[in-house]
Image 1 (cartoon, helix red, strand yellow):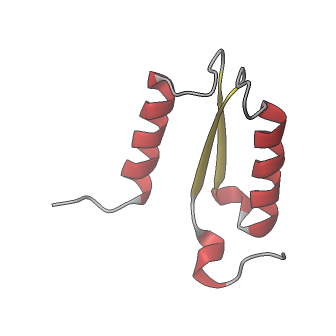
Image 2 (image 1 turned 180 degrees about the vertical axis):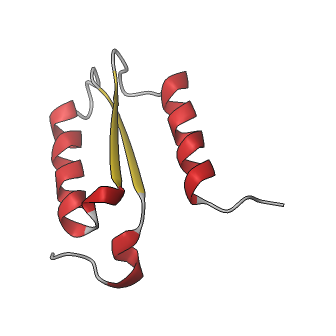
Image 3 (image 1 turned 135 degrees about the vertical axis):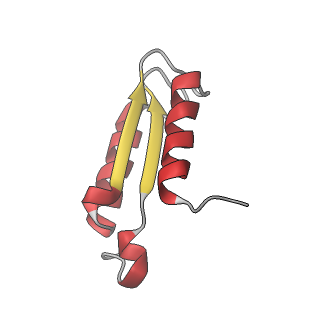
Length: 77
C-alpha cells in the first residue's frame, strides 16, 4: 500500500517500545516506525524507546503519552 493521502497524511503518531520486550522485539518496532514514515509525513512520527522496559509500560512512557495527548488533542471541558 502506498502513501496515505488527504488530511490523514498529516496525522501525528507516537510509537513507544521497550528495548527489552521479549514478545515484540525492538527490531519490529523500528521496522514499523520506518513503514509509518513512508506512509505519512515522517516529521509527524515520533518513536520513543525505554531502557529496560519489557512488554509493559513505565512512568516515563505514560508521561510521554500524556504530553503527546496534551499537544495534539483539544482540551476536554
